[in-house]
Length: 440
Ligand SMILES: [Zn+2]
Ligand SMILES: [Zn+2]
Image 1 (cartoon, rainbow, N blue to C red):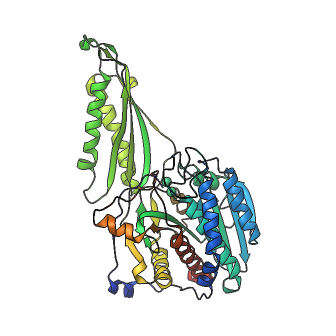
Image 2: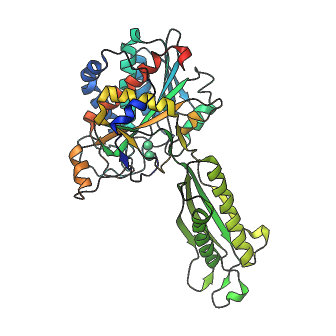
Image 3: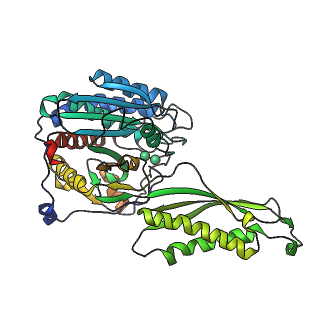
């Protein structure tokens, strides 16, 4: 998940429970017992993964560890799908196909926590909790494999590389994730939260996470002597106008009810005070939820940049050059029916007070791509609390600041975060695999 902003959450009013669609509750017995018995070895796996983080597109050892874990559970495992992607399949008669996805990559951050299992790799850290995701994924695979007599269908466990740079989902889909392997009827994932207490989960039906487009704009001008500006077209002045004009797009062209962000994060140009440079480069991030607003914003950015360049006296050949920086992320849509069903399962699993409805967030996730294949696949990602409850209370009272995701001090509390993740994900998968095929 890309850098974090505050999450605002609210508890559901009790009355709302009775408005939810009837969910297929897992007729499960044994999830809690298996999770309880396996928690020590899951924590050990988590610590091992945390100590050996690998960057995006370099998840060689991590993927090998996960492939071995699934093979040991009896899954049919394929490696090197779309890079270091792993696909583990278990067929168990006729029924739905349920996909469970984890990501595997870490970040170029020096860990500054004091945990005994601190990263062994200088400058690399699991600061986005993907080590927690992998551990929950393995724990869920274990529960599902041990409770085979309670479900029918196929599970597809996907360990995806390169989420942070937006490459992984795209690469795995391009490498036949939905054609070489059974196409899922449902796809599920979770992401750690750096604000929700450990032992809780959160969800949001509908548009949950934002689209992300990172752009670089090269603003050209005509350079010259700082003492003779009349002989130049100053790209620093022009860029300043563009930056200010960009701020008006959202305030004047987008309905106030629609969340959207254009943030310019860097400006680079020039070398010294008396030289007017010939170009300036700016980079910006664009985030929103609805596809048509995203398209409007991208068109408006070009229109504003070209318009200001025209006003400055540049010719069309000299207009700013706009290019995407890295992969874009589409917005993440949580299928409402699936999400409400899963929320009901979570409540049954954890208790009402441990399940929270969340507001949407302007971070992004490339899991969004799984749901955007045609025809669309009902998809849901939910949030897993990982913060010590005392810290949540202290932060709410203004006594401390919680370390954010992508920060060098982020420390998830392994227990009960990991068992909570395994219990909820296992219950979710089992509930879907216990539905009759015609129900979905
Ligand atoms: Zn991240
Ligand atoms: Zn992440």
